[in-house]
Image (cartoon, rainbow, N blue to C red; front, side):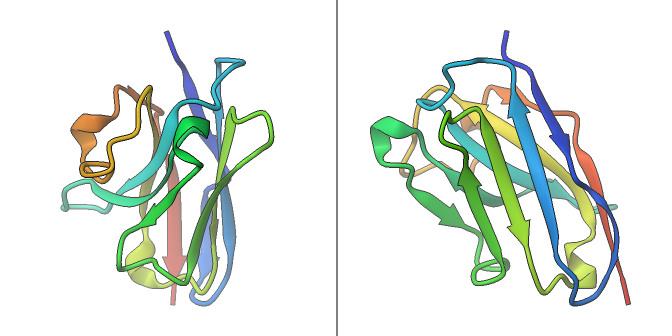
Length: 128
């Protein structure tokens, strides 16, 4: 059973930066595709960013709303994934979830159903 634990959320002001971390329980996790989703109050959960596993060249994908502001990366061992967020906006306020899949889906990387494993989420609040 894979366990994911997010950290790094908090309360920041518009224009600030924040870095989220997702740690996986598996030691050999570099083959997994990892993603970040978020859910704002009253809205459906949406895709934010993803990075594929070693077999797919650690390909990064982003939602249009965060391109140029958010960067997804993973450490050398592959079992920790980061989401660096800069120029935060109030509309970025949400609970951010880490997700993992044992394979990379080049077509449905932004689809929740692609990911079998989920963390419990970390709250990010951006004030004006």
